[in-house]
Image: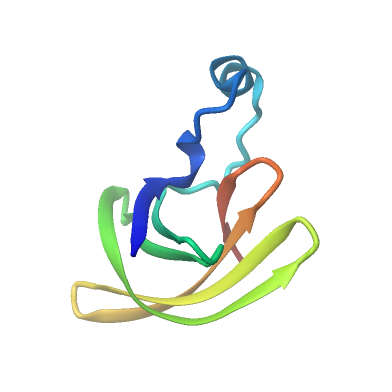
Length: 102
């Protein structure tokens, strides 16, 4: 069984203050993810901008999840208007910010 959360909304003691003082990188994106009891994190949906229009897209496949010190790198598939996009998402485990990686 898994719980679905926005990773960025964990309730930490100083969350409100941390949020106000945090500098968010330009390549930051909103991601809806599932968190399993075994510690696995799986991105499910992402909010992206296509041609200046923001849309929420389903992540159809997660090809891989590579664990590094301080972040996890996901290779994923998103389909928008019948066009397949392969994207790389980076979850910074220290700041809990999802980044669209190049």
